[in-house]
Image (cartoon, helix red, strand yellow):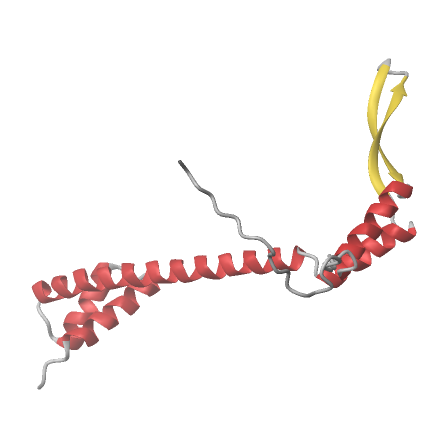
Length: 166
């Protein structure tokens, strides 16, 4: 009868550990199935526990990576695309969106001014800023540089300057 390979036994012990089987039960099954001594089993048990811990750490790291990726994806979904930003700015410029602000109102019960949230349509200054942002996004404010002195030709120097230090 050939002896089973060490790693096969350790893998089986790891599977039992993962299932939550207790030491005594695994020992009894291993001694019966593979005809190994308790001392050999204890060595295999120790290695199996180490492999199980490494495996669990790998699983925890994989779960952490997946959670980080999900968080990044959720953040990216919250970021507006250029088209969405343009649509929002257009709605502000057209006065279709109410902008939340706070106004000071007199509270007669407290006998003092309190800040209350109020929804207002955008005023002209806000609309103009939205239009300005749209123009910037579309590149309408790009600088056009034209050389008006030489009509695009390279300028030539008509004089030499030499500096003499005495």
